[in-house]
Length: 243
Image (cartoon, rainbow, N blue to C red; front, side, top):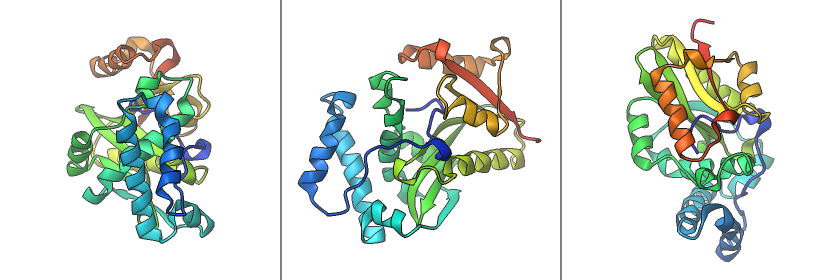
């Protein structure tokens, strides 16, 4: 959904689970539960994205994400590959479900465009969390100011929650930003959602006073407001790279 509100691994949600039995009708019936959330014009795209993710996981593991969980997959954080890009929208949609009631349904139905993901990957601004070589989470950075790396999006698939992947993604970005010479990592998030502002505070992020918001961050907040997100519930945060 953008705006750095993703799901930290310690607090990941329960969302749509890939079906391991190969019954496509059952998958589609499950995914139609998204209709009230996405609206009639978005359901086919959501089904396509999530089914594509499910089928890829089955090809990789032979039994899907549920079996992968049982076998305790090996996790790693790494730079995204071009082949990962088509699988990321399904992760974003699944992770967004926990924010139902906190953000407008139209925002929860958003996914990062393929063009933006492709551009981020080509510039080294996109990271993935892999479970046995299958992407199960990602983090997307935008450089909005010369000295600032902005965490635009971070999501972990609910099937792989509570394994520290969100924290590892954030810290990988902070380490990269320090090495690349940035002074700050910034983000915007919900102040009243336990797995948003409090999570980032535990990782060393501080709230940016409103009078200290840069023009670039003010534009981010304005864009969120135009998309229907209540600005009183949002907060901008930053973490110095030299910590």
